[in-house]
Amino acid sequence: MAESIPSLRSQPPAVVGTTLREHVLHGMHAAPGATGEFTSLLNHISLAVRIINSRVRSAGLAGMLGYTGEVNVQGEEVQKLDAFANDVLINVLERSGHCGILASEELEDARIAESRGKYVVLFDPLDGSSNIDTNVGIGTIFAMLRRSSPKDNVAVDDALRPGHEIVCAGYTLYGPSTLFVLSTGHGVHAFTLDPNVGEFFLSTPNIRCPLRGNGYSVNEGNYSRWPAPIQKWNQWIKEEDKQTNRPYGHRYVGSLVADAHRTLLKGGVFAYPADTKSTNGKLRLLYEANPMAFLFEQAGGAATDGAQRILDIKPTSLHQRTPLVLGSSEDVMTYRQFMMGER
Ligand code: AHM
Ligand code: MG
Image (cartoon, rainbow, N blue to C red; front, side, top):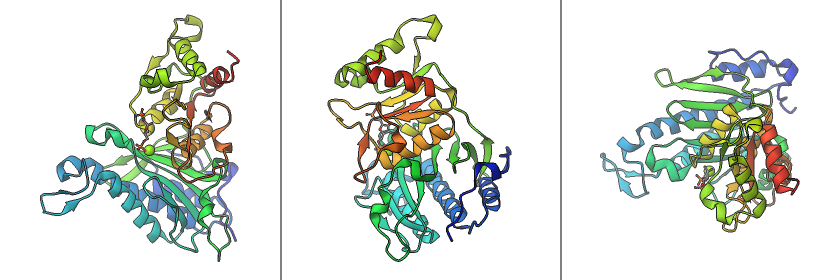
């Protein structure tokens, strides 16, 4: 019998200070027919990101920044941090026994992890790679789906599913503190890692993305490459207008996890549009756009590619790119109106 993902009605209230482990366990107890596999898989993901976190925190000292082939003080070859993060996630997921198929930004193809595993896990092991060497916030992003291929006939194409089939998504932000932001389809909750204890504790339950914000986040260096409607939106958002709180403030880190997290909490809009260089956008649908879109919708925000809802895009290839616009529902709607020529 398939494990039930807890329904909204049956979820116990999220209480500040609860550990991530307890939170996930409470969800399991509230789900009739739960087998513990979903819970165990999530706990394994939490273990993987804690291992990655510990390396991120000591990366400079351990000589892990920069490129593969370096040698650390023990004379061992050191891996690039993103390759390390990828290996940790793969090993932990394979050992969990519950991950049927996994796919990563760092792997060319999806792979079978455990043929009896019920879940598909898609991830970007270390997002914001251009910021790794500069001590700026980076992260891990993941999405989990229930496997749709039959038990005895696992198929890697199971990874190519629209985002509305996601059952759980989250990201870790390795910033001044380490945050694990999670949704199992019952709102969005943020957990902060206590580095002394090695546990994530619930710090911000039930995150709601404000209906409208006053910030925008986009790589404005690409302005000349954007289509006219996006240039028009960009000019509009910088105009002086008291009534609509313009101009919006501009914030851009260049790590999706950091830019999206700020937008989730403060509201406003994050955009990575298609342009003449990245004709389908830059960000990847399956392990960057979809998990973020799931989280924003769960928090009352919205996510679009400029024309359609991100979660409704039917993927055709593992590493396909998409334009991505995330944020407050009204700000995302305004962007869409510009894209559609309605403004
Ligand atoms: P990555 O997965 O290789 O790190 O690339 C994705 C990153 C995102 O984190 C970020 O939103 C974007 O690329 C930044 O791109 P740009 O440097 O073009 O602004
Ligand atoms: Mg990335």
